[in-house]
Amino acid sequence: MKISLLQKMKDRVRRMKQDVLALYYAYRSPDTPWTAKLLIGITIGYLLSPIDLIPDFIPVIGLLDDLVLVPILIILSIRLIPAQVWLESKAKALEFPLVLDKKNWRFAILIVIIWLIVLYGIYAFFFRKSIPVT
Image 1 (tube, rainbow, N blue to C red):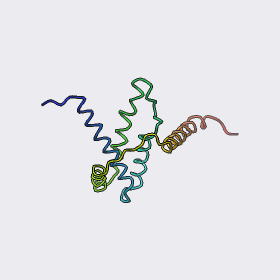
Image 2: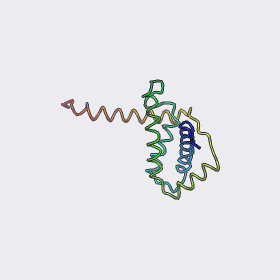
Image 3: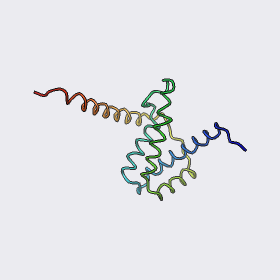
């Protein structure tokens, strides 16, 4: 029996939601290294933030960050987690499913602060060097 493309996409999204929940549980594990926790925090913060890198109302490009950036962040986060912690977190995600709220403004504020730091860094790199200091 042939599985439709739509069904494959639905299955992939379902697995990605489980992976995000497993990332949440891995973040809470004391055995997860701080580098993994940092990337997991950025990943989950970006997912839960009501503010996107590229707003969704922009046709095609607005959804591109969700289709490309989010899976990359998830994959990189998983690679930084020790195998045993990841297996335990996946099992916990299946046993104790949670619904993570996307309207959490604390995450939105964190994302805005991160973007302001990035923009300041770009400004400092390109414009501060070209202005002579007397």
